[in-house]
Length: 250
Length: 329
Image 1: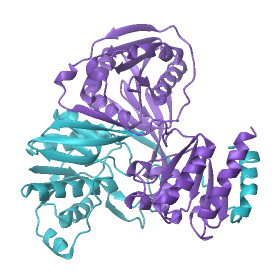
Image 2 (image 1 turned 180 degrees about the vertical axis):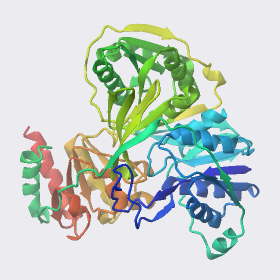
Image 3 (image 1 turned 120 degrees about the horizontal axis):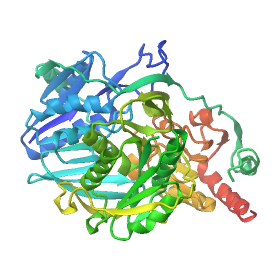
Image 4 (image 1 turned 60 degrees about the horizontal axis):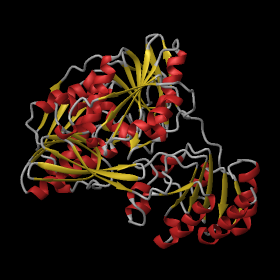
């Protein structure tokens, strides 16, 4: 089975973010970057499908500046077979513009399965995977928390608010991966050494016009917490009083 | 004076609250841009037409209904093709969807079919010249982006709870239309809806959330968390990733960076230290209570009210006090 996984390089979400001087972006000084959370799950899901199948190839694809090559190498060190860097200086805020570039790459690849993370943990749109599927004209299940493939068909489970649904679909298909499928493995030393020799192809791309423009980025107001009202069960009457009279939520 | 479109989400024949929020949002945008009409689309198994009246009561001038036995479950390809066909036929300024599990699947499909731009998971919106300007939390809610989106129409998916559904009665014109593709021809086939406990409030909709972490020490002690939630009567139960990873609670209960993002009126963190991963999912709650034995736990830094101590001793006392307070109302 030929599997592609589209991954994004994103800031570590444990960062105390600062807004850059332009007021429209994150100050990246000292910020650690890594494979975005859900995209790591997608890579793991691809590797497990390949291992279960006993045969196949996993290609990881990322759009962005040269720094994404580090992220692609990480996926290679986890066990992916080859990587494609779609090189551009600026990734737009427009999910459809991104989906068009990725779909153009995926379309010629002859992939049976095209995986994405459920959403990019930074941009939080949860849009690019289903958009790419529509542009490619292939079936899509988004935010799968379980996925199995057999006989050219897939079965996936999606979590809903207070329920879940199960869907079936034929390959080739796009599936976006939610948490729950698999925690990403850590690269082994052997994997890191092997990754250096795996193919990483660089393809310059033109990203089309973006109709989504960032006007402003700002930090939400800080919470002013930190008030300890007491210790042990004795503090309960005061807590209840505050919830009733001050917070007015009881 | 452009019209506005709203896709009204339903499940198992009943409207979801987020569906009516989309209608209210469309009504507000239409009124703010010269008072055009709101056209709503609802799809489901035969019987869904009974919802047209309440959709009209929330401000829709036209309610288009697709009833088909093949739509008892959400069928993504059929719904996306039908919504795209309807939006494509009108000259809408904007089309509203819900940023729910279903809507986050649907809206990008429709946007790609139409070649339209999408503002996903927006918490606020306004028309500004040719553009729609929206607010959208990024980086797990630690940063708020203001985005300007152009094109006609602009599709928006609205974060649940971002607007409150409200009545704006219309005597809606109701039309029954056919699905754009035959549900039997869909490649992605919905097989089954695994209903959770339907009596249970969803984390995204509950005004109160009582949440538990490792400090509860054993899965059976979640009973104390459930008891407190029951005492409130309007509370849902959440959990940390540590606890869902250990199988104490289902993954769907997880609140945090990779789980549910919630902002209830009251969030009670029981035996939760406050890992950044967890705080990302609940920091926008209006009032936060923390109960933890470690006075230095990070959760206390963002809690409005902290109680230091053993959660297993404190919870039964708090549950009893809440029960009494509720009875005296």
